[in-house]
Length: 125
Image (cartoon, helix red, strand yellow):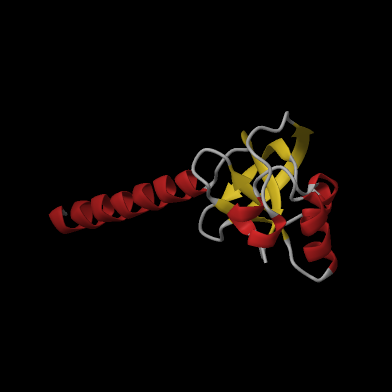
C-alpha cells in the first residue's frame, strides 16, 4: 500500500511540474515598444533613417524583425506582412513572443514618434 501511495505521489509531482512548465511557456500577448528592421541590419536598423535601406533589404529577401528598444533583443516576425509597411519606423506592437524560437507573432502595430539620431547608411552595409 505504501508503495502505491509513493508511486501516486511521484506521478502527481511529475504532472504538476509538467503543467507548470507548459503554463510558463504559454505566453500572453503584450505591448512592446521598438523598431521594425530587417534581418540583415538588425539592431543597427533600429534608428531613424533606416526606411530606404530596410525596404531594399526586404526586396532582396531579408526578413522583417522587431527590435525591442529597451533590451535591444531582436525577434523575427513570423507574420511579417503585418509590419512590412512600418520598416524603419519606431512602433508599439501587440503580439506574442516565442523566446525559444526568437520570434514574435504581431497582432497590432501602431506608429510611435521617432527618437534618436539619424543613422548613417554607410555604416549599415
